Amino acid sequence: MLDYLPLCADHGRELTSVAFMCKKDQCTGQIPGTTPAIPGMFPTMFPLATGQPFGALPVMPVQAMTQQATRHARRVYVGGLPPTANEQSVATFFSQVMAAIGGNTAGPGDAVVNVYINHEKKFAFVEMRSVEEASNAMALDGIIFEGAPVKVRRPSDYNPSLAATLGPSQPSPNLNLAAVGLTPGSAGGLEGPDRIFVGGLPYYFTEAQVRELLESFGPLRGFDLVKDRETGNSKGYAFCVYQDLSVTDIACAALNGIKMGDKTLTVRRANQGTNQPKPEQESVLLHAQQQIALQKLMLQPGAVSTKVLCLTQVVTPEELINDEDYEDIMEDMRGEGGKFGALVNVVIPRPRPNEAAPGVGKVFLEYADIESATKARSGLNGRKFGGNQVIAVFYPENKFAQGEYDA
Image (cartoon, rainbow, N blue to C red; front, side, top):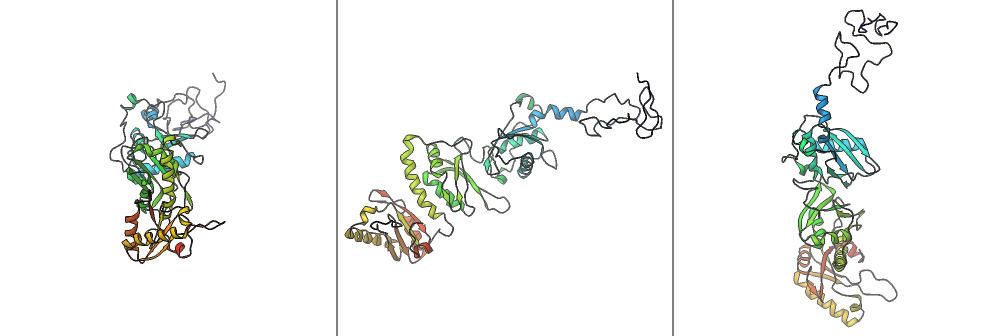
């Protein structure tokens, strides 16, 4: 029992010893020096009614209990975060993405209410407003965050049977996943563990150019060049799956690290680390790398559909040393190239004694117009010549005119 009566902080009046109520009418009263709000609670969360003793806490509201009970079903695990990620960037990104796909079902405002990041292990727990929004977020597995695909999963404490009683456990089939470069029923836009992530693409690459590069290894079952939904411009990355899944690792090994303009390609399985090709795949890999080196020319800005065609795997340096052999090859090239249109010039660089000669092993065909060059490319690319499969690509006219044959 207190041996004194404390004073009301607001009015300086004595509080009654029974309920610590101020004698002034309609004052709820409080002990001097105490905090008006309950620690850890918002000031208005549990208001004390007039005449209610301060020490008697009200029963927790149903809404607060519901939030606690549904928390396991509202949380989303996000793995594979880049080192630059922080709570704010993750919250902003996923709130914007959820809005973009139409995944917000709890009304206006941000879908994300809380984020916890484990920087050491590069994962986060993202808490959504509702169970339904958390389920919609499951469709975002494989989405690109700050240049890297991230895993979106249920947390380990997720209880499927209990969650089923709280709301939808599957993403809505009406989500507009195309708005963020994804498609329904898949991770990152294409199905299966053999989905390939292709990053670091120059923004000026067209869909057709990227497809042609990837198809050096075989036909594609699926392909998606991710574009900005407002401008329609490439975001610099794509996903693909090959019809022949055995070439997946070959393509990743051959393409990864290749320089394209001022960019370097990052190519890997979207949901795994880098895989090395098997020994029996090495010969296929070597041939594919040779093809890619030439196809890079075609993917340079302005190099598509020119009057100049560059052929490789037609001749070897040894075949160009002898003058008679060289002239025979020149005649053959004039004859073959002339079948497709007006041929202006044929250039076949030859080896030079004791010095490097640019372009040795290539054949350049210059036509009077682009139409003839295009016909020649279609007719010559892939043909057999001396047992080798010819690769024909367009070549920059300015480099050819300046005698730069090693581009």
